[in-house]
Every structure is written in C-alpha cells, then in structure tokens.
Length: 214
Length: 214
Image 1 (cartoon, rainbow over the protein chains, first blue to last red):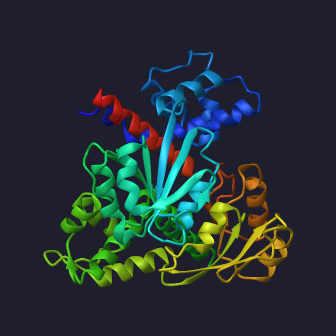
Image 2 (cartoon, chains in turn yellow, purple):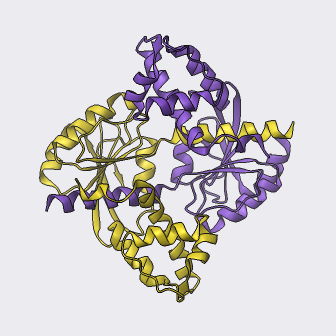
C-alpha cells in the first residue's frame, strides 16, 4: 500500500483550504485560532476540522486552540509547500498561457521551466521566463531536466497520448486541464480541472434558482 | 425549501461527467449502454450510477440498458444545457482572457457578452466578439442586458465587493476563480474554481509518491 492512500482524499482536499484561511488570519494579525473559528470561516464543522488535523498529529492544545502561524507552517509541510517544484506546461494555448502567466500559485515555489506546443507560431516565444518549445523536444527535455509536475492543456484528443509519453519519461504528477480523464498507472497522480463540469453544475443550480422563483 | 436543495450536490457533480462520457460514446457510434459500462468509464459503481439517474426518473429499461443519445439529451435537459446563457467575465487578466478565448464550453450555448476591467490598457479591446468594458459601467450594463452567469476573475482582495455589487444587480449564478470564498445570500449559487487548491493537493500526492519510493 502506498503511503498516500492512507489518508482520505476528502481530507487532502480540505487541507489547502485550511492553509488559505490561516494565511488570511496571519495577514489580519491574528495569532491564535480555534476549530470553532475555522469552522465559521470554512463552513466545515469544528469536529471535522479537529479530526482532519488529528490525522497528522493534532497541533492544537485543548482549551488553547491553535497557533495560527505554526499550524499554517505545519500544513505547508504536510502538503509539501516548503519545497520548490519545477513544472512544464504542455499545450501553450489560452489556458496554458494563462497558467504560465498566473501568479496566484507562486506563493508557494512553483516554477514553470518550459512550455511545449506543436504550433510553429508559438514555438520560440517566452512567457515570463519560460520558453515555448517544440513538443518534439519534450522527451529529451524530460530526460535532461528535473521536472516535478506536468500540466496538460492540450486538446482532449491528444491528451492520453501525451500522458503516456510523460509517464514513460518519469513524470508522476499530472495537472490535467484537458476535458478527458486520463488512464495512468497507480503510481501516478492526476488532478483534474474540468472547467466544463464546474460550469455545467453551476448552470443546473442557476436553473433551479429560476424555477423556484416561478 | 428551494427545489435545487433536493438533490445532493455530489449527484449534481457527477451528472456533467455522465454527460461527457455519453458524448464520447455517441462520437464512437455507440447506441446502447449499461450502468456497468458507464461504471467502467467513469469509475463510479454501477449501482451509484443507477441511483443517480433514478433521482430524475430513471431513463433505463431493466435488462436493456440505456439509449445513449436519449440519456445524453435527458441529462442535458436536467443540467439546462439545452438553453442559451449570457455570461460576463469580471477581471480581464490572464485567466479572464483565457476563459473568453476558451472554446471548450461552447459545446453548450454560453456566450461571453462582455468583460469588465479597470485597466485602461485593456478597456476597449475585444476578445472574440466580446468587448472589455470599464468596470464602472458594469452596473448599468447589468441593468440593461440579460446576464445569466457572472465569472469573477479579479484579484481576491476585490472579489467580495464585486460579488456584493453583482448580486445587488440581480446576478444569481457566479463562477468564481478568485482565490477567496464569497459570502452570498442563499438564493445565489457560487461554483468555485480554486486552481491553487487543486495544485496543492497534487503536490501532496507527488510527495507521497516520492516518499513511497524511498
């Protein structure tokens, strides 16, 4: 059994939220917090929050709550945000370029080291400090450079083929924006961002709200 | 009780996936499918799938399975993908522009009717057929035009203020890309796309995979 299967995915999904809210508290100069306060901020129940944190050893003192900065640092360590990660983006279209330009996740230390595309009009251009390279050079790049995370922003009809190739080249973490689920071996982790699906759910609720007005 | 609270959010989250997979079956020329086949494609259990679809009346015939095209159309109707939606994008930075350029969700009928920004260098530019307008004109625009969905792509420090204003102007569906949860009244639905959080979860799993190799 892999270590990463021990803790439920739902817990791992909530950790970045705790991290974000603790960051907001830090910025507001708050030094101490409680599971009750975090519950009000996050919408998760206080007991859920305590249980989640207990998975990793607790961090709080009963009756005294949590030290905000300490808890945030501990969560950063759990997620691995205290390290640096090299990233490539495959597919330098709208979404790929936006991600390369995006500063929202640079709070932690992610560096886009290259983008790859097959469009000759894009190859050779730079986005921030990252060069758009020929997709045909991806394999040799992956063999020479240390790449931790690959972001797939290609059309869905080539995404599986790309995934096969990068996994073969040793990639174990894929952030997938292509509108198709990827088949990968057990030792590879994929996080999907299916923008479509989130918009379609929103559309459902929008229609329900309108119906309830009728 | 609002109608939209009746069906569990987890079910609504799965419906767009069924829709997507049924689309792939249609493209492959498959006319009939079963909950077992859908289970293999989606990773959800067959009984889960039957239960989900039963929420809306079933659509299958025991022993005969589902008619692919019919089921896809029914799900489209449930989600409301058979209608047209006008969208505005607030914040015409990297992500806002990428979404305006994005064709992935045009499969259903979403039209970006305008973008809004406060940057004078951006105001007046067009992305596809949508003009980037001055954020100060948003309120009057919302009063005059029919807008169904607002997409927030602003920095997080102004996102709540923007949300308050658009809700006041009648917006009931918000697609939120700003890295901060929004406080909105019960009659407004927000779908969050917190790119950060998805990347942080991926980072966690990446580190677990590396640890299990040691």
